[in-house]
Image 1 (tube, rainbow, N blue to C red):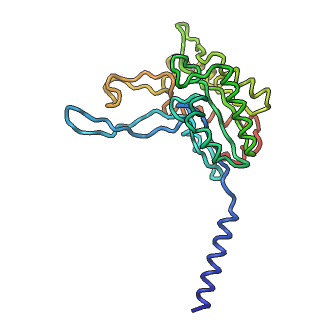
Image 2 (image 1 turned 90 degrees about the vertical axis):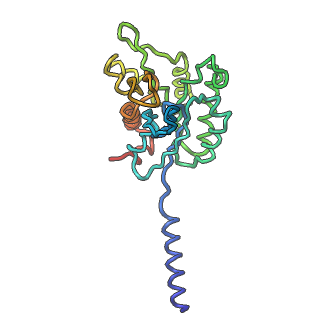
Image 3 (image 1 turned 180 degrees about the horizontal axis):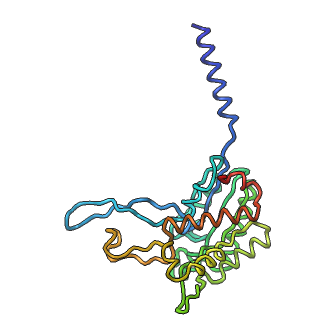
Length: 263
């Protein structure tokens, strides 16, 4: 009986040893807004005429939601991006602290803001340009203190064409502030505004529609009158942006990131 107990104990110790010695996954932590955030796959709609509730597909996607498809099993994506967040509200709501508390040496922290910081009329999220820069500088310093690598991103472009078919920028000075922080502090930076602007311009006014969260009237109970969203992506758009990000990371040879790409 004692011999059997000893054998079981040895097996248990060996299992614990092998589990503890297995390499921990590299975390890819994401801070950002709705264009990066994870989205639910269904939403509940209540029909007041029938008194019934229906599960309706929700087709909006953030590019961070599609990023795990492109990474191998050595990576673990933790997406803290949330709808409507600016650098200011992300900090004030404790999301940045939560992300930082889960950041360890060797991790990567992807940071993309700008869509909501510029909203002067929305006082809960507006961040003036000077404070926006200070927030990014603080993000970089705090991630580096953790021994992790910050990767900055300019905000993705909106589908905003003028009547000549030219894509018009909508983010003001905010993308350039991110570029300047990247230059001044030697931080890896993926210029998603530039990349997505070139992509949308190439696709054109009509061709670019298929990448956004657009729904014709009468198709979805969520949007009975239809939806014409030129900011948020559907799955095809989100996947395209995630692929752009990964391709640019590979081009820049950001140290350590290539080890977690799918081959």
